[in-house]
Amino acid sequence: MFEANVLEAPMQNASMESRAIPGTDSMPVSTAAELLPYLPESVGAARRFVRAKLQEWDLDNLVDDAVVIVSELATNSFKTGCQTRMLVGVRCPTDRIVRILVGDGSRSMPVMVQAGPDATTGRGLAMVHRLTHDRWGVTFLPFGKVIHADLAALAPTSR
Image 1 (spheres, rainbow, N blue to C red):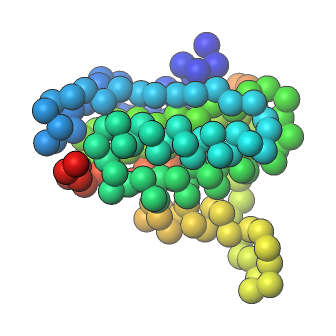
Image 2 (tube, rainbow, N blue to C red; image 1 turned 30 degrees about the horizontal axis):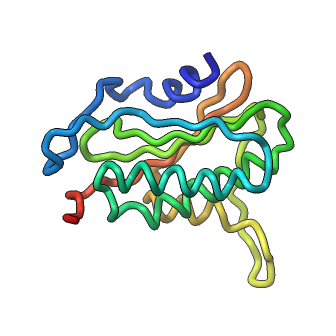
Image 3 (cartoon, one colour; image 1 turned 180 degrees about the horizontal axis):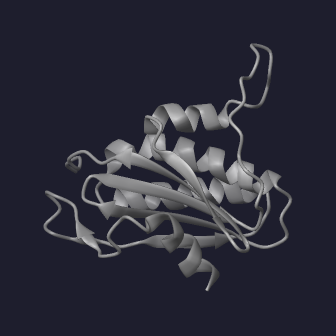
């Protein structure tokens, strides 16, 4: 139940159908998700998971940005101190969008702050904002929230 709500909440206006990515022999791309504990090492696990899925789907050109995005979102999720579980997901709601999702049990709103030049933290959401060209958001659920960030999917890279 947790997984379904987290993955579907930000998809209200997007098709829930699997889509084929152009140029990939019509391979359907479906939602992939992983539940992670609230541990510092889960941030690395989230990066590896998203990297592997995008490479599997021949979307290598999005890996670098997607890994930065999921790292920032998973780090924020870990820092909420929730005792439930964190869900990291990646999906293609259309053939032109890759959506990265991180759901957690906190209803605290993420805040983009203006980090000073000497600050060692506080730039994560600004990076997400920049990498997605302002295509990210939050959906609140009865038990927490889902943050989603969209990247434009270009033609897959050839192997």
